[in-house]
Length: 104
Image 1 (spheres, rainbow, N blue to C red):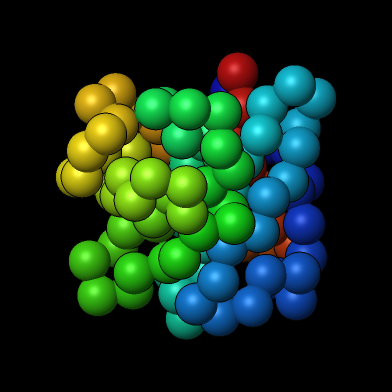
Image 2: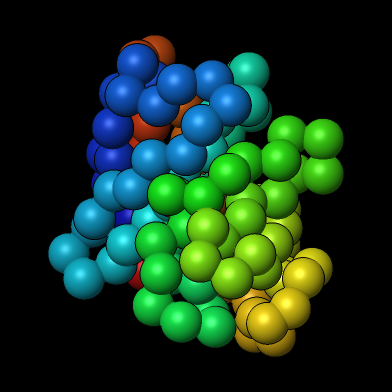
């Protein structure tokens, strides 16, 4: 596994999601206070950007704005239809002001 710099900690506002592209991999990064999450930025129901959806801090989910599927920020599992397949989850590491993601 290699660490790739994804962004600066100031690039993602608390309580929000932002999309970053690493080659052909689209990643939605979510910041909730000092906790950081990264999931695939594609809804598994349709090719819709999850980073454009609402973040639910109380349930640690991100909601697809198009049809309402919610995905766990922890394990990528969908918790609401129509999506039935999980989205990938990525490990993030914050070092100083930089946010890194583990990639294969």
